[in-house]
Amino acid sequence: MSPVTPTCLIHNIGALATGDCARPLRRADSVYIEGGLIREIGSGITRAADVVVDAHGITAIPGLIDSHSHPTFGDFTPAQNALGWITHYMHGGVTALISAGELHLPGLPTPPDARTAMALAHLAKRCWDNLRPSGVRVYAGTLLLVPGLTESDFVDLQAVGIRLVKFIFYDYSLLPNGEAERYVGWARKRGIKVKIHSGGVSRSGVSQVAGIDIVKRLKPDIIGHATGGPIPMPEKEVERIVAETECAIEICSSGNPRMVLPLMRTVGASHAFDRVLIGTDTPGGTGVLPRGMLREIAYVSSVAGVAPEVAIAMATGNVARAHGLPQGILEEGRPADIVLLDRIKGSVASDVLDSFAKGDLPGISAVLIDGQLRVAGGSEQTPPPERPVTITRGLA
Image (cartoon, rainbow, N blue to C red; front, side, top):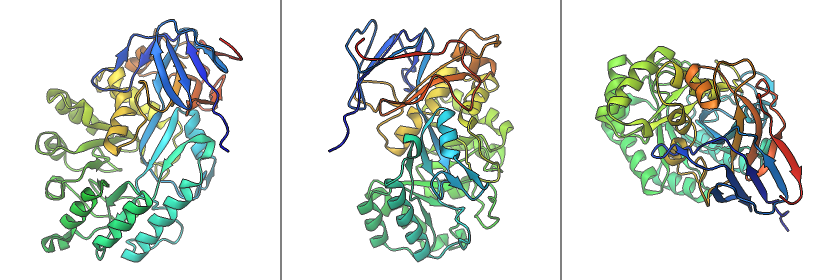
């Protein structure tokens, strides 16, 4: 029998950022959670609950969803020989990770042959289905597309619940034979998203360079690290992505920071903020970045001039929608993945949204995943918030 998830009431919230780009702020001061789901959002909610969190006027946002991560062996990453990285990311507000491929398996031949790529995807999916470090969901098993796959392989992907395939090692000199376009069609037929590594070569040195012409030909769902991973395509091509494709456009904290500026100007002129996703593209050559998602939100808001509540949506609801996930937005019926945070003492900002707008990192007080407190009373990865939450057990 599954354990009963305690009910939870969060009250005295100062600001609520929804994660929904169309409605990024909501006037409410309370959230009631039952069965791991948000059941009610409003003002002055007084329901009885097993756990009561007094937010003392600080800000609630959805749990951050890292759109571009590289998990391998649970909470250990051989890319940086680091333990506990997923737990550290959770202390940075991350409640879900989306694998862009389990690339850093020691000894993995790059590029892998078709059977190796399929075996790796299936193994990763099955392992991560049985593992949630600190409660963090890891959507793993992303298939690295290489020549020689068959439609039955995509049937098998669907059968085990793999959600994503990725062009990174595919030999684009083979494009005239139409195989790559068939892959896209086979994936879409089964509800599997298609991502492409864009820009220059990756740390492996054998990934394929992909600019606007490749992107327009393959028509992926998601353009991975459009502003560099670590090197982007030329600036004019980055700008053309907005007007000439319908893809979701991912930016990563490990990319080229200058390229974010022309991209955001173009996105703003086209009112296309709902297409932008935020990720870290870590662990990898850039390292392990527990505050990477927070840093990118602050950068996009303070330097690129995006409204902070919209930048938050890029790291939450936009990612969830692009990948077909249920979380990422604070509304009734959604998973209760919530981060409570405030300005850090000494900041000139008035609150969290103003902190992001000024380029300051916030301090995390609590993280809930599926309505369960995973961080309570302060994060190990941010300075303490000026106003910590108070947690009590029992009736409200």
